[in-house]
Image 1 (cartoon, helix red, strand yellow):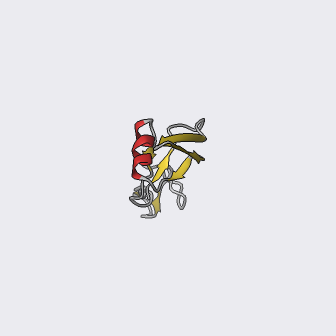
Image 2: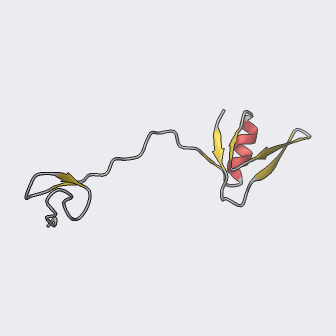
Image 3: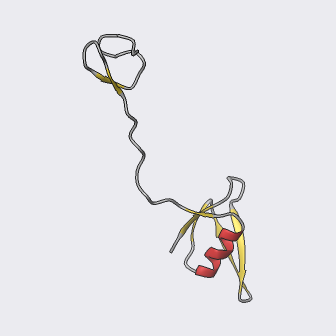
Length: 83
């Protein structure tokens, strides 16, 4: 069952006709059980939600003066400016 994301925040509901019946999906994130509905939604701009993992960790820098690890321009331990 793929989880699909709407193409923009204005789209909160969509009707998918299939086999004489119409199925309504409500919300910006929809769980689709039928593969033909998933193909129809992807054709109008829905994309599959990414499940690849968590955020990428940012690399900081090591202060040349005191050796403290920091993510900011000035060291939070000795206030030395990174060069």
